[in-house]
Length: 379
Ligand code: B12
Ligand code: SF4
Ligand code: SF4
Figure 1 (cartoon, rainbow, N blue to C red):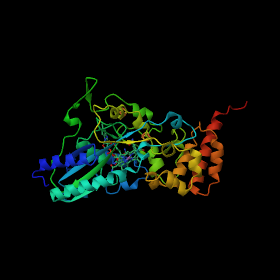
Figure 2: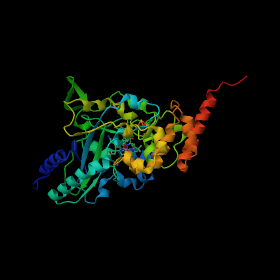
Figure 3: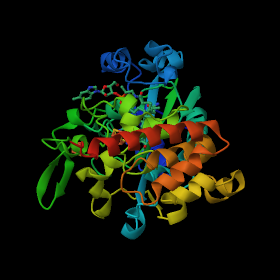
Figure 4: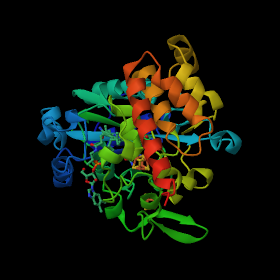
């Protein structure tokens, strides 16, 4: 099949995306993104922390036409996920770490990669144009492209929120030389979201007066709403950073050992997937498995490579590696309520891996200074 007009092509692409399991599809303009200045300000303020790759050729990142010369249009796809609620007895257990939901199942880059490749091949064949497809790793501002493609609005938690499914989603972007007219950004489509009604009331696609995520962030990384200061974000420290996690990001960190969901699990938009009347047809369910989703901190400290690869088979944690996961487990020992933490810290201080020892040192000093601050001064 080869659609005759650009509107036929858009319709055929939407249908193909749905067949392949994508919950949402939209089309963004080939022009530079509207809020490029906000990205530049973010970089200028140093909010990208050690992610130097974000600051490399920033003008390219804000202008997809520089990534694919002759760009005619941008397709943005959303992959929706629904997660089982964690077992409270396991999740609240102070001896266990917490893994962010997106990493509970197989690596999302792999899950989305295969259907995305099929989609891009169909687009190239139908249009006769060139295509480049990305999930997460392209030199692109995926939020901006998703917003301009009408896939949702940007929340104060700095995540893309689809009004029918919340923020538990992943984005994929396909740049193409085929001419594809853009959709309308979500807010511009009207304050009331496409006629969806909750309990008979109109739903406005925005955060409104809500500020829950700002209060829920344990480290103050959302001091400036709509943008994350990665220098304080636990997701940055536990996934991206290769160095010791600094003392100021420990303690209140809720035992997160890979990523962090505090600014998402609090968000009222993330209850939408529970509602059969609004949730999209294509939603992949991910189960809660204690060993993969909330492993014991002591187990992480003592785990060897074979056990790591077995427990976290096909998971995104494999990219970060055991050494950094162990560092994160040691960092979680700064949480005051972890029973037996001093013994585990002592064990970590003797570990052969230098990163583990260095992190243990930071945790030990932090705990000691907190204990000293609490000790009454003798007259
Ligand atoms: C770098 C990065 C990070 C960094 C920085 C996070 C960030 N929000 O910028 C760190 C390591 C901290 C991170 C963490 C996470 N990430 Co991340 N990350 C990225 C990546 C690779 C680039 C993001 C980027 O360019 N940030 C720079 C900022 C400035 O860009 P921006 O958010 O688009 O900024 C715009 C807005 O701030 C807007 N703006 C500015 N002011 C204002 C004011 C108003 C009123 C409005 C409306 C807008 C607005 O303009 C800016 C310019 O475009 C993207 C993939 C990609 N290539 O885009 C994934 C991506 C954003 N991450 C993703 C995920 C899942 C996560 C985590 C949830 C993982 C986890 N559970 O731990 C956390 C969430 C943290 C958070 N609250 O954002 C998903 C998000 C899906 C979604 N629903 O939005 C993405 C899209 C990857 C994917 N393909 O699925 N991530
Ligand atoms: S991921 Fe965690 S630390 Fe980062 S902004 Fe969200 S709540 Fe804050
Ligand atoms: S918690 Fe509230 S303020 Fe934060 S993103 Fe969700 S709706 Fe917006």
